Length: 411
Picture (cartoon, rainbow, N blue to C red):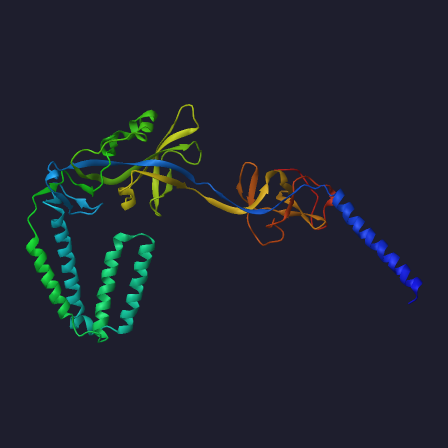
């Protein structure tokens, strides 16, 4: 190849490059289309607000609490009958400790006796016991992580009982006689130190017992809540009650409770509608009914009262809590409402694909004020994640052959 040929080819190649670069620059300059990238978006319609629990509660008093220490006989939420002993009163805290320790020692003694009985050890396999121990260990670990401390003692007792059986079955120990002897000695010592109670606390009526008292129990009559004005209900959220003297607990007439709060006005529900609610103090979801919605004059808020018949420790021991009314949650491809176009009756949008403009369908699952959500899919005929959405109309000659220019405007 001679030098002239090389020069001619070099000039031709340079011209070609200039033409290509120039055309790209011209395309970029002339391309004035306004686009927006399609992104994944989640809409949560839950309503959050703070409120207070209201229950039909009666305070229990003991007029001689200064003369002793109260030891409760019932856990929170347990039903008691009228005139039954709710608590015993002792001369000092040591008496309560002695009784609790004595009860614990008797439990350990009983479990050890059961663990070494031939009827218990003769019909179990070591591997099965090992598996049960591992499962119990995992359960205790999960309870600690979830702060479910009320269940840990029972589960750890079961694990210890199984471990003792395992020690007998595998021959690690022949029996627990030395330990049993020591336990009996300790039990005898504690029994010698126990004194009779100096008094008792009795229930005035039947109901469900709760130890805690905060003073709100007497702030409102439960039966009058529905007849209270908006201002009266608002004041309940701001009062600072005093805990009555000599109060040692309270009785709930039933498991029914109400939750009072102030929320922004909404058309998501009506009176008597059934809703779901979740509180910060519990992961549980409760089914509630809307008892009343009372608008607050001069504002865009209302006082709401919800009721429920399901109770647990979180509800029993809380007065104020942050709540969340649970509605639907939607996740899809976000599309500006101004970008919506139609091909016949098919709703969709124009997207940029390289230098081409293509019509893509949208499957609307949620409509906001200035946007919609299209179902997230892998179908190329529909709007996809990261597509470049055209925000203005296009002419027929701009649309690629895969799309149609029957642009009838926005939704």
